[in-house]
Image 1 (cartoon, rainbow, N blue to C red):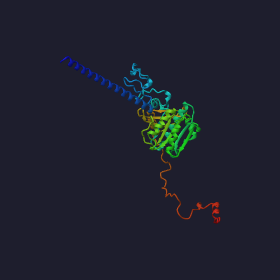
Image 2 (spheres, rainbow, N blue to C red):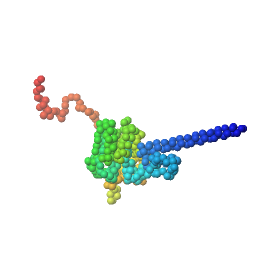
Image 3 (cartoon, rainbow, N blue to C red):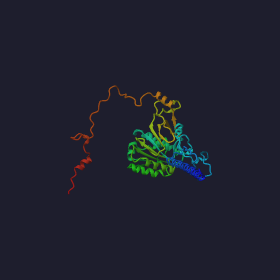
Image 4 (cartoon, rainbow, N blue to C red):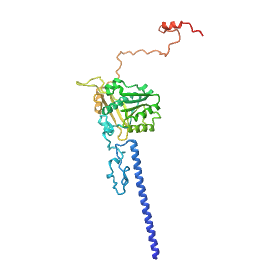
Length: 379
């Protein structure tokens, strides 16, 4: 091989190695950019969803998204400030304590990572229409906790005419006695249509002059979709106020709410006195609370009692429930005590009186009889 051939071969080898190095550097740069892009997207998704009680470590070698790019800086994960860590994994709650509405029940608050999020949309479901009272009572208990912690601002309760016809309105005297809420603090907005109720809730959710907004919906309407709940959740975050979505007999559907609780009424324990439990009495209101969905907690079920004097929840343990069942083995409704023979069967019930001569009580009044005798107007 001549020196010319050797030089050409060496040149080709160097050119090949240079091309390989450039290709590897391009691949590495592309991978780093891809990792940073994916990490930035995860941060944005986490911020939109409000999953800030948990962290996502930045990929190795990736600079913080919010920090300026400095090629000479050390960008290892240990040197990334805590504010640049996004929350998407369970078990690392780092949000401030005032970001939650603490119920006072240690088990439920711990399972939720500190309590219900204060500046967010929270769902409270009732499996059937008969659970509407329990759902409303639990929501009013949460409102009482909010008013106890902060300024006593008014609360707006929004619903359709169908909702208030089925479940009724809260009783003013009970509001003050059980929850410490003055009747003038609870405002109601009855909308003729669901679309109007959603619009009212969106406008109210952005107001800081309200302590909380309650939206009560029946069933699983199509308009209450992921887009509508995202708007409610975003406006609750912006205003720093909670929005409670009460669902009557609704099916669990995808929503933007970080937490969904399923509520039902629980048996009340006997009233406690100095001499002990008062037999046959009804004690504090009790709720069975199930965590149907949470981005920071696993599913669980708790029985809570509302203490109207302390304005807080107390958790009832499983042993107390078993003891209560043993102490009260009788059915809720006792049997009839009117003797052995049952009442005779009722006859036919008609909506209108039978056709024929009117009965004695159906005769017109003297005033009506005089009006009937008046002559007809001419023309």
